[in-house]
Length: 457
Image (cartoon, rainbow, N blue to C red; front, side):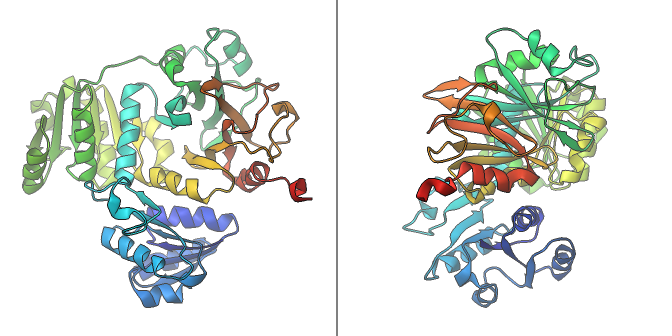
């Protein structure tokens, strides 16, 4: 597949990295020549310096031969124009645009076939806000990913020193797990390496577990591993950008009694105050200890740092925890910071970049794929797909299928029923199946999910 990526920021770089490593022909367009030179040294891609909204630049990138255009610059206008130019081609490619304006979403008729004709619109911040709401609903989790229309969740959390599972293998743990509430530990990140576990795998302190469970069993699962359920009645948000606005708007519709936004720009404070109903907007610095104490930070259930400065987010979250906030979440885009979060004492992260990458991967993966989500440090991926009658995985016990190394089936949904599978479980055509696999095994997985070679024989 030939794909053009407009924008060489974190999202563009990661999409290009994934696609190029899977053997696709990738062109990256950006106005930052120094950034492109750095990318050319690290990735096997073609780079072009220029604007993605320029017809001449897109012609140089051979847009007419591309199957996909992914426009993910920081400018909504550039992304929209790039997609419009792609639509003007006789063989129009699949078009994806990052649209950050909070007043626009994928449901807007502006993007349908009769208007801008954009196939997928992504708002990274809106996706990240959904992730934070999940973290607040399932306290103790560091990440919660929905599958099967919300009936199955993949929940990640760090193993604390007081967890009773430490020193036990998974077989022992499952023997003591409550009957009738099946779970499956799909992946463990230890240090910076992903482990696809077996029954003999022993749990250690600071392990990062990824566990499949039915949605109505998640809270019990977290409690089993020592995570306490906590209410979210008082929330502090640092940063007054679009992310903060959408988060406060979502929290106002939820159960939260007190919401406070701290923002350095007075004019932005005034705008937020005019658009939000119950949120208190404070003009100030989120790292100002006196201000935090004056606003009773020690009573905060959650402190969420969402400025454009990742280092400031981490610093203010650490400060809030030191001053007594119960939980702290930090907006972090750089994957290199992910493994540091639990070591620093921050409870969770919101990652707009990873949310965007996951949405885009859904349209890239072959087979009847519903969603694809990078996990942890992004060396593993969770994929939900619909089983085809003609694929190699149907009508056979899972234990008889030669899955690629590092692959585990986490859940199956069939006619509304959720099945946490064992070795004797069988996937039937049209089942929704969720698996976790190493990124290095994706191409082998795609072959298993698609049509058998002998189907046309």
